[in-house]
Amino acid sequence: MNENHDENERIERILSQVHLPAPPDELKNRVIGAARKVWERPPANIPWQVPIRRLALSAAAAILIVSLANHLSQFGGNENRERPQAMAPTEDLMPDASLSPLMKRQWQTGRRSSRIHAPGVHRYMENIRMILQEVQDSGTDNVPVPKGGDSHLPPSHPNFATCV
Amino acid sequence: MDEHSADESIYAALNRDDPIAVELIWDRYAHDLLAMLSALLGSRQEAEDVLQMLFVNIVRRRRALAGARRLDAYLFRMARNEAATYLRSRIRNRAARPWLAPNEAGQEQFDLAEHLQVALGQLPQSQREVVVLKIYQGKTFQEIGRLLGVSINTAASRYRYALERLRSLLKDMKS
Image 1 (tube, rainbow over the protein chains, first blue to last red):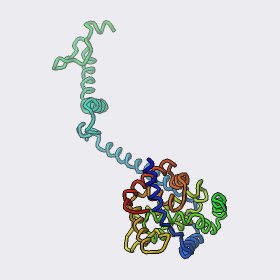
Image 2: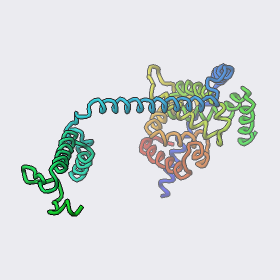
Image 3: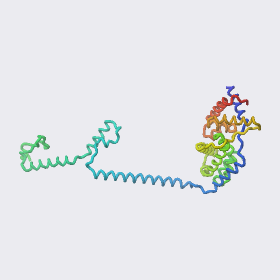
Image 4: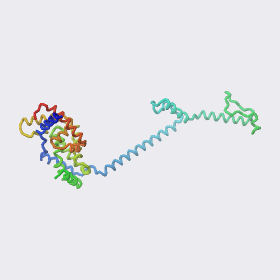
């Protein structure tokens, strides 16, 4: 410890054999002359203008982003309305291929339930309408049964007409 | 004029937007700033150039300087940033003028100054600036800590590590 202290003192003594010269007058004149020239110029940035400029730029950027998003969403909506039948396969529209199997299944189910198959519904309604028409025309005794034996109507009461 | 009243005069001149502030800053801080810039850049001439750039920047940012809580720490931070910017774009196309001067005349003393300059140049920048401020500018660890934005303990340990390194670099040299 003592030895270290002595050694440090020796190094300090060596270092003290030299010095850092003070800045000469010539340098002072040069530097102060250059600084004064800058001082006399009007400042480039007036402080109160800086935050206002930043605020204006932020507002412009926000307006641009919102209007761009609005435009893109309208464009997307028009495209969907123009091609309602052109549904891509569910897998192609998957948002992220890295989803877990459970989440994929949920996503597919959600999509399927929201989709309406228009020709199928139309055919079904037509079928029902036809059956009701026939029932109305021929009374309750001859309830028509579809070919496959798979009736869409509830089981009929034998004395339906008398019940009503 | 003591240090506190010198700083008060500088603040007053800055608030009045009086160009005399530049001269007051020079008288109070130029030597310390030049010493630190010399240590950081390892060249007296480059340190003088950077000092000029620093003073121009001080003038440009005089409003911020007027609002600075600690004038000395603010100026030293500006000086270090200026030196770092300069070092990034440095082109060494001129012979470096020695930044340490011998206390006495004679070839042997000049050789010593050159030798010490090389040894100091091998220290990390953070240690070199502490050594220069302590040995050549006579600052206390508390002052160094305040100027460099570090704790007293950090300043003292940097100095201790620097001396350990210098001991091995200068082991053959007689005091």
